[in-house]
Image 1 (cartoon, one colour):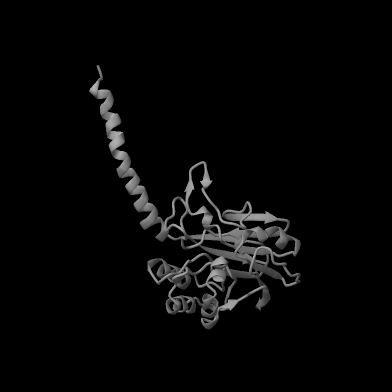
Image 2 (cartoon, rainbow, N blue to C red):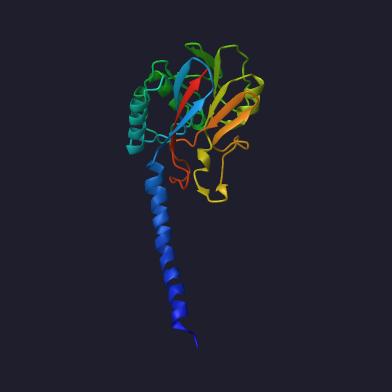
Length: 255
């Protein structure tokens, strides 16, 4: 004969599973994707200091609370330099809204960007970057004071040599690190991975896109070259995040 007391707790567990699943789905879709984390990093040694704000993978469609929060962070942090490392739009993006968003990004040494795969897929976005006054570096270099800024279109483009006091490489694709190290780049800023977007305890990222290599999020080093891979701000494919909050990174760089 079955003991009803033994089955009562099992029944409660079974009945609670759909509720738990619904709560996790709500959290992953409605809370975590909008819960931006501001991460802070101290890099290098030297008498000169530069505050860099790194944005990537915004995946702008229309201006919403997440985009407003990004602009609020920029206003609060007052960086010297803002870097955008690609995938800042979606296919259905609102050009006027995106232009307004980009135009609101202001820093004394300028705002520099490189392409991501979404900029390649939606070429109309390139004109918006330029009309908003963003320095889009397409396999090109530029100076911001005594800092050399290099922007690459892909993770396979050659990294130019140089001798500036500080050499910074913008590349959407983290697989660029070995080539950057060979070219004596000091710092690399990359995105593309979203940190996996969905992560599980003891497992980590369930998926990362092409051209990431072993680099998922955070800091990596090769030789004297250091690379930070940001989790990014937005989402793609599925509008959710789990155990992988969106990120705006603030870097205090000494050189």
